[in-house]
Length: 258
Length: 246
Image (tube, rainbow over all chains, first blue to last red; front, side, top):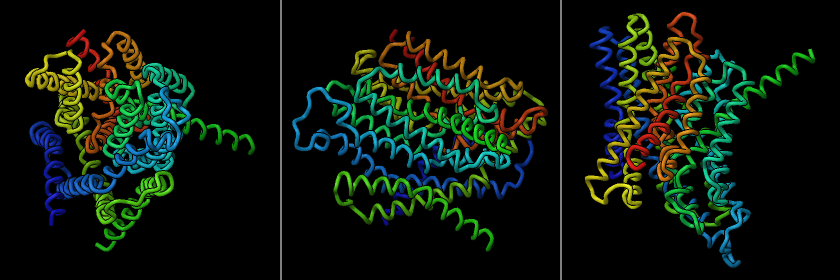
């Protein structure tokens, strides 16, 4: 019974979230375009399904995945787990945190695969490219990018390096790749950076960053805890372009053999 | 009806597959690395079922509602031929969807807290609320502007990489001038602006426009709106930081 109550609560929150978009669409459709919406019944049902789907999705995440993922992030970054029976190092060595990097990469990859907005963009990309871009391969390359990004970001927090060196290096790599990458993929690759950091990934990744920054001596949650998300939105751009470049090299090789 | 059901079940299985990696990761770390039993197994099981159902409904509704409305509006605007109305719509869409975004409200509140503790603004409720609202409107304005620039790019057919690389250069330059406490918040604010409903809608808008305008390729010109929307907030939040506390 309480589950039903919680569902309606989340549904209400989602509805409030969607209301501005819905009113903008309606105002422009009715006052500016001044034409009835094509297939209005189907679109209406579509919106209804999206609402119900998002509410169920968020409720499920709140119930099952977030508490567990956040608890695990806390436990893995806890000095008691990291040093077990050894003495706690006053100056942390980045080697002590191997499990944290592995967890960061794994959670980055798996949450990105379940990210609804990435699924949406991947479906659209496959449709528009007439199948030249495979939705699943795109999602997997983005997920690999996020995995590397979050792991690298965790390493940065442990090592205590300033964030902008990493980000600026990343930008330089993106610029160089842009020059050599197939032109078709570039806008999609840029988009995939913004898409990844959404409903599922952000809460878990943020918990990991705050856990790390608040347990390692000498790190401040305010300055070091932020910024994992910046890594998670930069690395997918590099990964998607790399994927396109690898595919291009492969097809060239095949043609040469023929 | 039967066909609809088959499609529904197929996407249900797809959603299960999408969730499998998370389940495996959590199970592995919980049992093998941390070596602890799972707490409230019942809750977790119910939660997972809800997540799978939710994802299925969302994707189902996406192709029925969000994609078609985005594309049909793009085509209507293109046919109407009024650039100004299109740009106004673009701005409203960017601004309106961001200003009410719950994750942005949360981040702005947190940032106000940090700023008050750091002595950048007064330690009072009104000063904090003002600061948080200022941040929110800055981000929302910058997203609105981003969609406008992105739509203009599609109409004119400008290549995307000059604009994005120019944006990166701005972020890098601003980083060296902006106060240190705003940088982390600025970098993260780019990520929180694009919500689950905005992304499909904006993507459909871009693709719809690019396919309605002659000489544009939906693949090359249609994508890229979201890239703008996650770049401009970084620049504008740093400007905001410089204006507030130099």
